[in-house]
Amino acid sequence: MDRETQHATELEYLRALCDETALREERQRLIQSLTQYAFVEPEHQVVFESILALFPRGPISPAQLRVHLNNRGFPDTDVEKYFQPAPTERNRLRAADKKTP
Image (cartoon, rainbow, N blue to C red; front, top):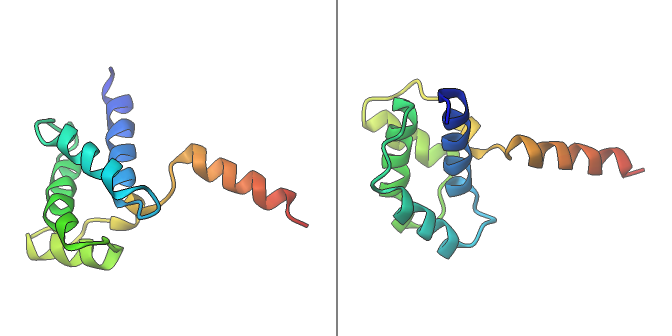
């Protein structure tokens, strides 16, 4: 897998972990499968570690993740991208919007 593909895959994993509409058990299984994973993108590793710390406390919001990252010394992390739907989901939502009168 090339670096660009791996970067995109990691971003999808992190978005899935931040997606509160997904079942908590599914997200827990994903966390367990990623605990030994070495993220290619250093920011992704840092964000995953923060998600890992926040997950047991309940729902994760962009504000909570931002504060946690800031407290860990990463104040400039763009957390919003981890709470956006994946590109395919975004395209599906756009198509649905176009069909709405």
